[in-house]
Image 1 (cartoon, helix red, strand yellow):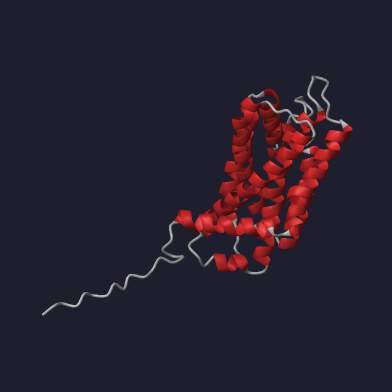
Image 2: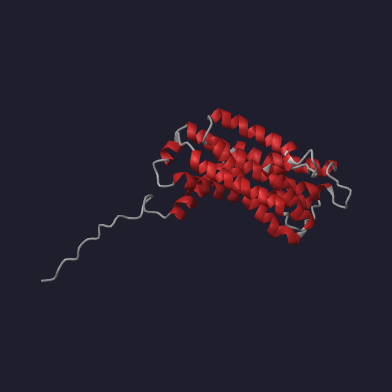
Length: 259
């Protein structure tokens, strides 16, 4: 007699069986689609940086008298502003309201976890940044931007670490305070850090400005300018940014509240 083969009742791979990498990729793809379809986030991520880039380039306020045009100084700062917009403001506000409307409560029941959520959002920020950098770099090129190409790798390092740091800060704020406070605080930080935090306008080193060089915004702005104008790696700003990133990630994983 021929034996009938046993039916394989092994469950198909679902959310609980998916690898951590696949869960993070799925979360990152979802966050990216949400950001690119949100008009308010596009305003902060693209429209305002484009307006700032054109205004700074046309007015010439950043001419440094050392042979570098205003647009050469402006583009690295606008790249830094893009990182700030997507990481801190964009993800901070989105996560704050996800928490308010119960989306995070649902996500807390999945295997994603706070670290997986953080990594998924960092991945989304990097995906959005690709779009931002292409658009802003193209406009900068049209306006006469002439970067030092040998510093491109250094610039990418700063952008990656900056994305980690500012996304971590944004999620820390969103996961520890009320959504309304998150909205106010992230927008306030965007204005203050963008205008006076060393992102757009370079801050020279001195006793009176030493504390400002410990800000992640100043570190990112100075690092990108050094990379794209001088073609060099700014080690001190890189160390400052790495420390901010490590503290922000650790704080988010430790104190993030899903509800």
